[in-house]
Image (cartoon, rainbow, N blue to C red; front, side, top):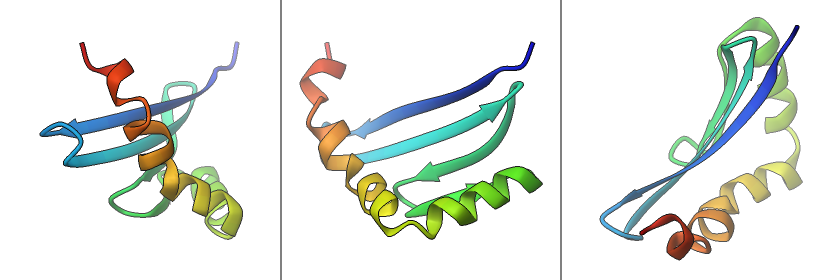
Amino acid sequence: VFQRMAMFECQFINGTEKVGYVERHFYNRLQLAMFDSDVGHYVGFTPYGEKQARYWNNDPVLMEDRRASVDTFCRHNYEVFTP
């Protein structure tokens, strides 16, 4: 059995003053690649993850969407995430 998983996280510091978006990609519990809004691009952690990160980083539409996720996904859903 093989498992591929992606996790999407919003990190809120002091309300919506400092918001971060993190996207992680795993294969069989091994982290392949990660996007962090503070870094602004994908980073690969395995040879396959580095290849995927280069592919994703070269897609301007995808990168614009990921960089905008802080506002469109995290800040937009702040009331849902907080108690």
